[in-house]
Length: 88
Image (cartoon, rainbow, N blue to C red; front, top):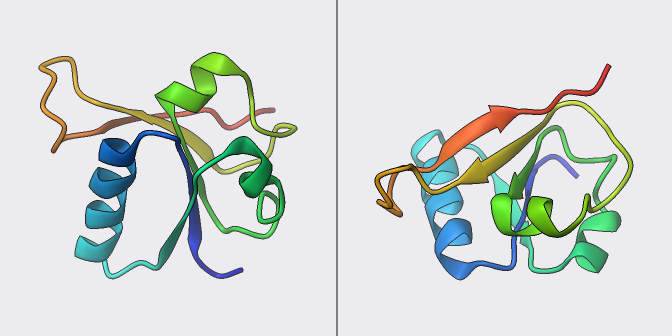
């Protein structure tokens, strides 16, 4: 897998992150469930986990680089914020 992996069950978050990836000319794939994410978890060069999934439970064991993406504090769905969660 050479595409970034987006893990979210929220269609708005998936759309925002796919739009961001397209603007950066970076390929990305969406896993709509935790189970779907496991197949590409270690192969993806970057994993972006939606806050909806991260709040429920981690989708797989820690790996780097991984970031959590959520809507901004203003509630604007068009400006996701990311927080790096690179484990040790």
